[in-house]
Length: 477
Image (cartoon, rainbow, N blue to C red; front, top):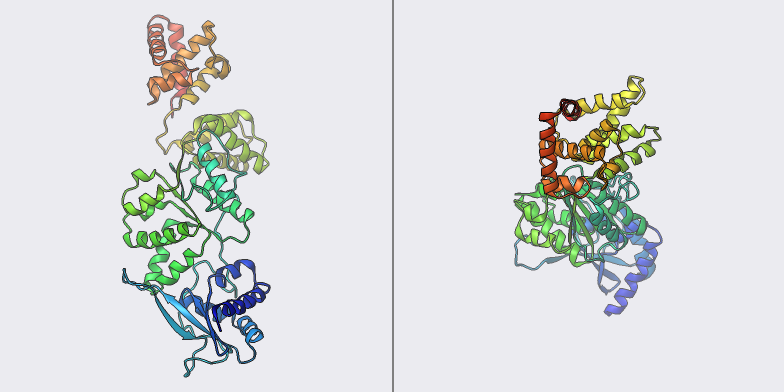
């Protein structure tokens, strides 16, 4: 028969198969198949790998048998052409033909018994043991959604880009999307949020989230089992691939090489790639230049440590989600005290709730202070400008907004100058940064404030007492 008739026969088979299996399984195991020829009631189809062929015969034999006989009659047969990637570079892939079942005759054997795949069949790394169907688990944590991601100035660009990708995966200029930032700034959360939104918007697409170290271990296992082709084939079938902490592929040349080919295949076929890293591409050491250049094809968006307002919003959202009634002053104290990252901030809140529950104590500001002292003592914590301003304003009973305003009232000006003084002596912030936090003042104003405070400390005993008391309140234990 001619090619048109071959395709017609195979399309008729696919229409029946599609009605009898899940859409995701159809897309994974039947969509990649290509009909090659039809001769003497023997239909030859091309499959991507030996493992692919084995899986079809292991789990879809009865269904294939029925549709072939329906289209070609009781004498209908099937053969497979298996594409094997040759490990030697520069050589074209090799196509080998095998009959659909093992027999002494090379062909024309009825579709009636499964192919023997030996004692150690290659397994899809994301198939749940015991299930007789393909299950590509996304490995996504449902709590890491866009709804639970607090947006702020520190993450607005990355969040906007991530949401755009989720609406049209593989169809935006943000491919790949590389999200980078320090530990605890929300990289994994945002990357998984894209995956969750993709699955909601496109249920038929295959989404996979995986840490780079697991990807590397799977590759090593594939090498040991002589199953590199199957490993690559599996990842090339993913529609949205999310790899977390890509920096851990550093100096792993073979893993980088196989990821290079996976990346190229996905990108060229309009599939979405999302990566996270603890540093921008330019600072990634031990990663091949050809990979780095591809990381720069799309968008690299950074996540900064959350500002005070964002930290408060994060805590308020967590408290609301947990259904807990927490005093606002406690939330503010935690937000002022813990500035390093979101993970440590949420950990502090969890510890506070645990102490309150186990010790049957009310959550008060004093309990929060005790917990923060113990929780943060083991880490080198720098006092923040926000925290200094909070302590100074509480001491003088002033709203922070008033201290940051342009008012020239004596008591407000003095509190502002004291806050500048402690910010200069207790933080590593520049004079310009300190001025910006204190109502948009310039560096000269900050220097003048520091000189004024030093002079008053030398001439005014009461003022000196203020400074000593404030220093004790601000200083870390």
